[in-house]
Length: 542
Image (cartoon, rainbow, N blue to C red):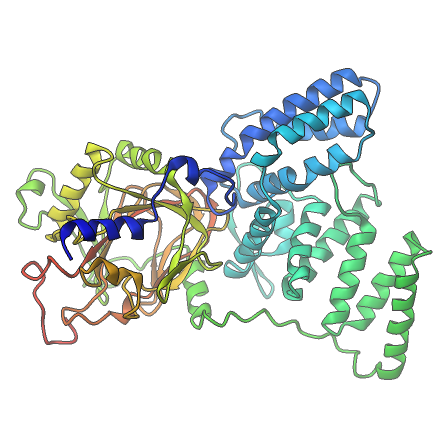
């Protein structure tokens, strides 16, 4: 295969395309840049709603309250969608609340104008799948960082272990969830039979609805009765019949004519009468198992450290240095190298790019972002264990990318010209964005990586293009350490031993972003072209 064909395969692997196609009706939750873009149609909806209110000055005080609530979130043009609670409620508001407001009103001339304005932007609004994705992101953060649901509902990020409560992140401004917000998260879990997550979110929804004395708001899809109904059946499904009975009786107080619930009460009473001694103890709910994630406990434990590392005086073999790699390119401005781990050898190069370069890379990539995929056999698939959007940039896109390639080549001593390296992949993580434990190198001979005919991925060079406020560390599972997000720094490691065998210790993960907008750029370098730059060895440890 000639160089031209190899470059064609590089483009195929890059999954590139027309920016117009990349910005079509795609999911919103998988990249924060997409969430931020969703603010624009909501601003147009606010204008439409304002015109409606001017024509209906004497009507609908509740609608005015909803307008003021949403408008207050747009006072600052740079709304901090990095907060996953705010991002979730933004998607829910656009996917659900606005529709409920619009379709709850009478078809007068003014409401027709309001509906017309809504329909004009409807195709630009998040889909129900985005609401589901955002809800699952909150559950993911809840699991990985052991967050308390009651705290999350209040806008507080707290880890609860037994009686111990630890503040993981303190937002400058609290952003709480409503009863309907909590209900929607619980319902997403409920609909998939995931009662482990459904019950605490539905319990919080019931608590908040009770606190509001059953008051219903125009934008709400659910009510206290809905939350009681779902929570009662979820309790029954996990064997807590006494809880199901209590909630069902409360439901009948508000809706005494509901025959289905009346039948449920009779059934629960009969079950308790017949098997009361067996149902006295509350059933412990097991967290759903993840078959593909055998290292879940280690992965989550490393993420919970938030990237904290032992200091160098505790491990004397770790060190910092100025690195030139005997390259004239780095002679006048050596790289600031920090060895953060020895086996596998992981180096962090501080200030590898400037703020201006990082911003330029993000700007170049944004129009091309598409949902990230993973190699599965011979195919590339979208999966739940990787939530992000990515784009691939050729060095011909901008001269700055050529300079960046020269810098990477000088520092690593490797040939990174195509087809010996892939194009620069730029990734933006979504709400709770993550990438569960994986290898960068191919572990199957049928992997799409081998279509390039340049061997396996011998090395990874990953650049952090942004900072995050909490979470998002890179966790090395078998190495048992994690590296925090360090803006403008680059992380480098070898994926293969000198024998060509994969290094199992490089199993790593991108921890969920708790708060922040995480951007990274990856340069993957292949075996071919490096024969004299990194010679082979028969020693399996090299």
